[in-house]
Length: 312
Length: 312
Image (cartoon, rainbow over all chains, first blue to last red; front, side, top):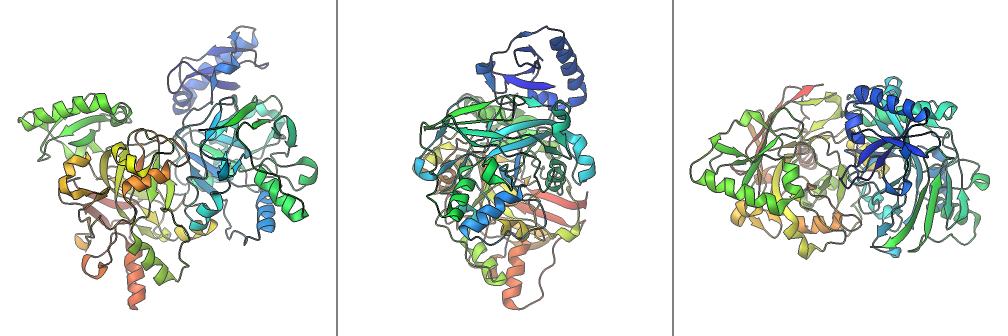
């Protein structure tokens, strides 16, 4: 099942169910958050709408009128589960390895997720404007102490998102140990949130086994696959829920998608490409300038992120 | 003006205005978040209710039926603005000084703030259960790039809170650079949120000039004053808003209240006391056990936090 949120001039929009060909939709008369808060009830309603769409009913889908699937969320926890990404950063910038036997995770801003097509307003090119292509999941209510084995059952939806990052600020904040505030402005999210079953064989062991393709200004930049996570999303949920209940609508990210064969498949963030440039001894790829366009997609599953960075 | 949130069996409760003697209240027929979202309108309504309370009207206030003033918030950003606290931790645990010329700040969980009297459910005494006494402010909408000079005008409310912390986990997470997830479960908040004018001369230069008194199991533990912040709350707002808009209802914390004359005034967290014990070469004060009771107050301004830690 494929869901989206239609802009109805309210803050949280209206949940719509989207047809397989993404051409039609039906209003669900609730918000995405309301559906997640009472998923058992809501899912039955949504599946009935999906059946009507499969039978050819529905209104034309206006993609330009879609918000992020969850325009704001009560919690956004971002992992960094692709080991290749960390290894490249450490090698290039001569950083000590991060000492931990647990998943890496920080809490990020969740009160605003940008839509897939709106301009990305940032204050300064001097901040080192970068993107990070990630897969993410949306949970139902997860009780404190949930084990990884039980956590897969709490995954309601899967997302594709761009975790915008400001690289001139990130290492300074990271050195304090406090994580990132200024270095992590609002993320952008692809228009369609899908239930795990919608992914079919591309959903395995709590991982999204699809290539995430990034282009900058229309030029291919990378398409690594999402299955190289050292921890699956169920492990990330269990980590997050160790000392807290997770509310329905918690979004948990994979971190930058990255593969060991990056020479062939490329990267999903500039910072990793710059690390590879540095290791190879070639001039480093520049960060983004205002006006630059970044697109991300994983086949047709989540729809397409296609945005320009602009001066705020 | 003194505000609170009454438990009405909904998730966000009902905003009430509270009399000066905290004996009476009047319902405002809105949530705290709704008031913050449209403060200009709401403030007029709330001030009119406050005038009726001053004239002797109102219902008896049931303190046992109060939630946290904001039972959940879209954003919680916690600073660490008291230099003495950081210096003691570094000296005792031989940590390198944190290299930054900016305020320290992390993003914490904001989807649940515990009331002042509910039990605090935590999974294990082995996690090093600790409290942190803090003052905090609640903002209106703050635009990205807001300067510190303009930020005082965006402060709507002042809070007293207990930032529960798990010290066996905190340094491990801090070393990753990603900040804290497991080490920072839900905070507890004193029952009354007050407008800055309510503090009178105790609100100066974006700081709360009141002693924050902590007791453990009825024994005095500390009462340092809130004015020793290296950065005022207006500075913390400007820091937070450097690359993001802050939504109305953003809560920003001072970090553990701490004074240079800690030998006389004590501390507001066990970890700092343990640092002082270590420096003095005496046995370190233990962390909390299940059943221990922690109280916090700053005179009568914010009411009293009085809670037990319990096994989840």
